[in-house]
Length: 165
Image: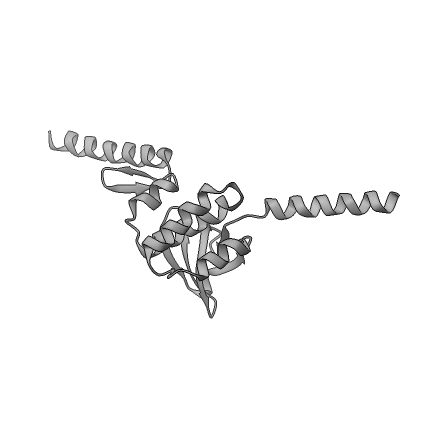
């Protein structure tokens, strides 16, 4: 009886650990900075990824300290992804919207939205679906980031005006 209870507890903890596994990939650079998002390619240690801010970056092998892959796509989502032309933003966006609308696949939907941005960085609907904010033609990953960046821009404009006057 005690072994059954212990086995059940271990199974529950393993299930929780799997559920809490990060959906996104994390790359730690040699300088200590962390990049979170979706790894698009890993060739010879050089990594191409799209960050959660929607920026595509290439990290040379010499600058990569550690790579932690997130949880793989759910098999249902992966199967649907295999059935479309993932290089076409419209098809990928439609799949991402479907996945985000399904509670079970919401994390995968966010990852697919990042892939849409890797193909088309200006895809407004994908950015909005990810919670990004457009402020004066520049996309920011959050309203807070937009607010901070716009505040800095306003300070620079004021200092230029003060210097001219």
